[in-house]
Image (cartoon, rainbow, N blue to C red; front, top):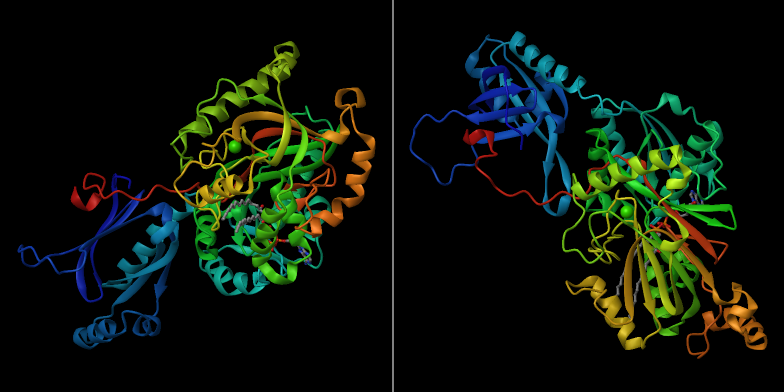
Length: 555
Ligand SMILES: CCCCCCCCCCCCC/C=C/[C@@H](O)[C@H](COP(=O)(O)O)NC(=O)CCCCCCCCCCCCCCC
Ligand SMILES: Nc1ncnc2c1ncn2[C@@H]1O[C@H](COP(=O)(O)OP(=O)(O)O)[C@@H](O)[C@H]1O
Ligand SMILES: [Ca+2]
């Protein structure tokens, strides 16, 4: 908590019929109960509260009718009766309150003043402070996917989010999508982006993916960047994106906020938070395929997604069903992974430290990469990503996963790569080699416990800037000594095998799961673009530690 700084306003006001010393500085609103007796009372409720101005949602003057209704009803009427003709006024401050497990709620406190002028002075002083926070959005473009998750997107937005935006004075243009890629295409061609301070996505990871594809495309096209060239430096998007979780996994929301809760996300948007995020570009033979911010998974997660798409009617439970089914099929895939290890950065995928709000690792590495990008543009010969640094791994894999963020979600609260960073310019490449079903189950189970899922002989993890994958059948014949007969037989049977877990053979190809969308190509070239987009989030907050020194009430 910040220190209060110079006080702008100090008054004695009443809250629920008790006297409080209330003060406002540029950073804090504090109300401290006036204690008539100096005797310590262990059972009296907390006597000092303070709220950071940056977390005040709004302030409103109460009319007589309002204040005699809400939470203070009895006290207001009593005051009126007691004071007779002496006219009193009240104002209500709405602010962010932290609850368990990173949830935020909107709390209210009503202050009663001795006269109208004082009340108005308080309201205008608080409003003046709120106006100085330039990072808050005023006008937002909202896209709702009505078919994501449990098909509750529209209801969630209308009931939980829209009223909060209205209270915070945010105006919105709302589009309920009518078909897949509606939001992406609207952003690419129609949306008047200059009219908005941000874009809000109501849906799951797939819907978020549509939004970033629209926004990134638009930003590059406006500047003439060739997105088919994997070596191009992409331009960061200026508009921030807010995610209201209403999908099936909602891993991007969970990994950036710490919870999947629409009200919490709406409050992060209202207070104008900003969290940069790395984006991977995925290419095939110099053709752009897709962007990814969370998981790029081949093998297990690709197969789970492919299988689950046919079971959308099951809702979010489709992933568990297909997860068990694909665990039982136990397919492995042959291929070659080459990667460019991240150099000169802070942190490894096996660290005990986690990416949290205000992460210094992300700040350090972000700075490093923006300097390197500038340097590379000036002097091509200084390209740090030269061929000699590439490393190659060949083998049979149950899963190849690239986690650009932790991929934490309710199924796995620590995620696929617990030490991954949101904005460090790298992705964690996890290779799970062919092993027994029992060992794979041990690996999977460790995603849900404190045990290290990488501490197994058949698992390796590398923090990388770039990687490529080539499935076995795509490699040159001499390289492979390909058994053609076996290969074609496998291709014919691959779909049959996928659908019949009891069948012992393994298909040749899996598919890539790219943030919940299936990729059309298996051979891919992936590059991380450091901090290409920004979210209305602040990263997961560390749980507050009670400290008297930091508490202005104790000063
Ligand atoms: C035995 C328990 C094992 C639990 C292992 C859980 C690991 C979960 C890691 C999930 C990472 C998710 C990364 C995010 C992906 C999303 O972008 C993407 C799209 O999200 P959207 O639908 O909101 O648009 N979601 C997904 O691809 C879903 C992945 C879900 C994987 C679930 C896997 C369940 C595995 C169950 C194995 C059970 C074995 C039991 C044997 C008796
Ligand atoms: N109106 C719509 N009708 C059908 N599909 C849509 C619509 N709007 C978006 N989509 C698509 O729905 C898919 C899943 O959306 P998402 O919000 O991620 O839900 P879920 O988490 O359940 O997968 C995405 O691929 C998205 O492109
Ligand atoms: Ca990252």
